[in-house]
Amino acid sequence: MAIDASQSMLADDYQPNRFEAAKSAASLFVDNLKGETGVGVVSFSGASYIHQQLTTDLSKAKKAIQNITIQGLGGTNIGDALITSSNLLITSKRPKVIILLTDGRSNVGTSPEEAINYLKGENIIIYTIGVGTNEGGNFTENDIISTLDEETLKKMAEETKGSYFRAENDEQLKESYNQINSSTEKRLNKDLSSLFMLLA
Image (tube, rainbow, N blue to C red; front, side, top):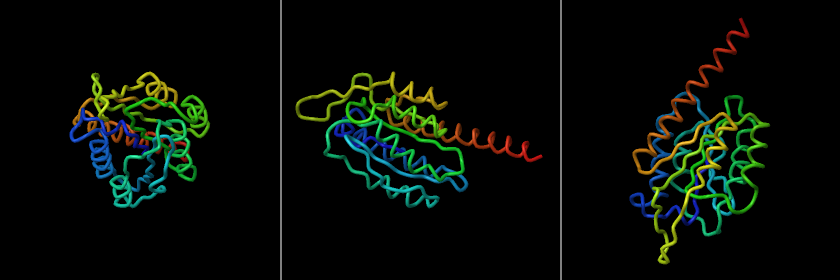
């Protein structure tokens, strides 16, 4: 899971803000996972940070999510966030999935296009969640408005056989995670069925 921790996530079009709503929905998603699912946690702004290596101890994953704080380093580095997240999945034998949540657009570091090519080579699926209302939200005293780069988020998902979700409020955010959970379970069951057919 890669969660945007840039300053714009403090925008007030969610209650209390986008950042806290994102962490709450991510924690609920972890609660609903089944089986021996491995979860890693990454946050990003102008750089990316690993908060939890891949683990099946979901309590550790939830604690890592709740411990993420807003980062002071400027910018939104989506490309590096994807590569950092993918490196956590290298040893995984199960389907590899990254859920990336952001409210902005990549403006520093590795380009999303470069990251997509790298992830496609590793057979990693990207689910992207764009948060924020159409009107945007204020996060500074100067009334700066944060806008979302939906085109790039859609492209990242489509090119890795994932899906893009737009969440304009808390309920849509939670529903996005629910749909990702359901889709991942179906994909895993399909992959296992193919394996059993091959063995037979």
